[in-house]
Length: 125
Image (tube, one colour):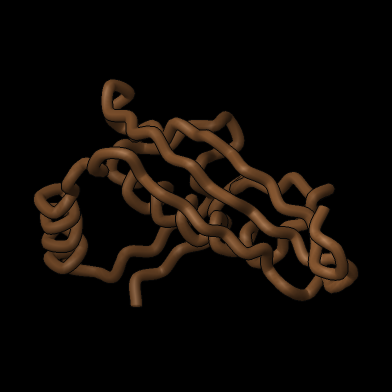
């Protein structure tokens, strides 16, 4: 507890690449939840030990595939009601994780537990 400011936590994490389970990095983080003001996102400071895998090549392949579609990408219910994600939609699912992670961070309290459930609708813009 930090008087008149909030609660601070020190974490030691292992980040795992969901597509390459052998690719992990250690991370430390400090998270400060502000007292009394639920509209302020927690402050997060972190360090990564080592390097994250370079995804430039995979990102370019995905970008070029989406760019070359004859019709704009439109999809719904990722994953489906059985938890299945079609292989061609996996990059969209990963983008959903990133977006939901930001929303969770911005709206987290010490007593919330949000996670991505399903992408209801996506449309390429």
